[in-house]
Length: 174
Image (cartoon, rainbow, N blue to C red; front, side, top):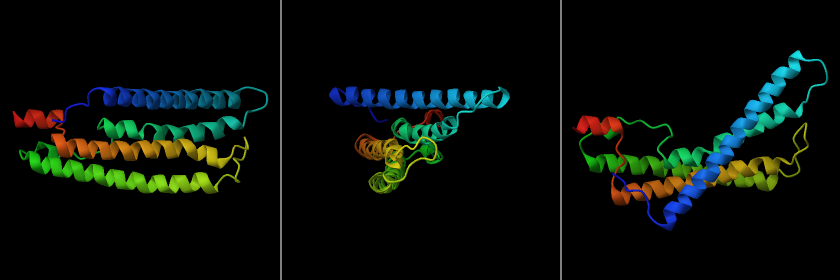
């Protein structure tokens, strides 16, 4: 099983985790509050606030990409754990490293595209708020950078220290 990092790296990882989870929590709360406001506006007299829909849509995208790195580093992303129950640790290690390398390559490609969007979409404005679309893509870019780095670190950790076994695999091995 892969040991957790120690020392300053562990503290830095925890701080980044806390920052990303906090940002994700703020986005989730923002979505919740704005959707409640939208629902209330439909049943109450008075003018509606059209920016609530726009901000909630942006917050959903930001939430998705902001916490993706945390899910990758904690094994919370979608995986098939069928291989993890095999009795051959080398095969499990190879499959887990391969999977994380594929995740890193994919996230890296998306990072390049997000960087291109940040660079080229500054002239475009969101319909209601007039927010620069380059600013809208910055949280997406940061989340993809985090995902790429975390997938590479996870692949290196598994390659050096062995595979991560799920609870199901531990029970089957007994």
